[in-house]
Amino acid sequence: MTHGLGNLRGDAQYASAQPASWTGGTRNGRAPRRILQAGDHVFETGDAQSEAYIVRCGHLKSYRVHRDGEEQILGMLGPGDVLGFDALTGRPASYSVVALEIASLERIPLGRDGIGEGDSAGYMNVVEGMYRELQRFSRLLYMDRHPAERRLAEFLLDFSREEGERGRSRIDLMLPFNRRDLACFLGLAPETLSRTFSRFQEQGILSVDNREIHILEYEALLLTAGEQPDSVPS
Image (cartoon, rainbow, N blue to C red; front, side, top):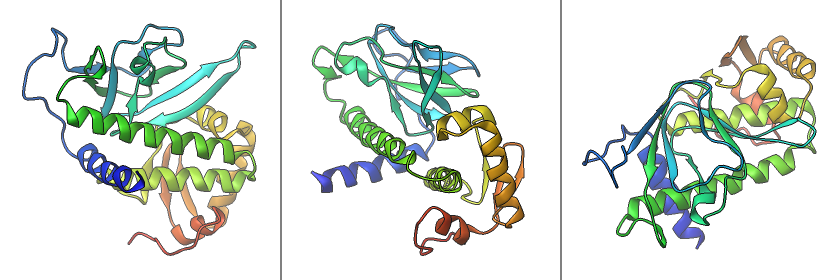
């Protein structure tokens, strides 16, 4: 099983870095592509779900709002990520997803028994998406044990690697999250996050200009995250 998931992960990572296209114009009378502006919701908690999506460009955030009105950010979604798993079970959406910038989503058609018949690519995308979601929630559960410096370092390294898989720079990053959302995601007060960024700048690890991040010392960031400095990009 692990071997199969590894192969699926490699295929989906390659696909997410390539321009996405359909050979046909529509599927089941619906346009295969959905374009969102910043602030547009794909779906909200409680919405009926009939289709899943794969992100082709742009970034989105998934979140829940608790009864006391507090927002919990579950994750950041980018090219190659899949959303709408509730549609596979016929249940309403258990969380909300909103675009952080202009984003393009590709619909994954669902038949009576799940993914459309003969759609092996759609099946692979959904399995890869589930794998990523499990990894994402695993990191969220583990994150609370760490101090602020390690939480931020882990986030930046994860984002750097994802950008590298998409054929982008692993050193020069443009964060789609604003500071408030990033602090919420990391479980930190905004003031604590700002102080942590300042410390990283003072230590010469990062150069920060609002959402633009330049990693100056990748090895130091790895060590702060508790990792071995054996994967420093050139």
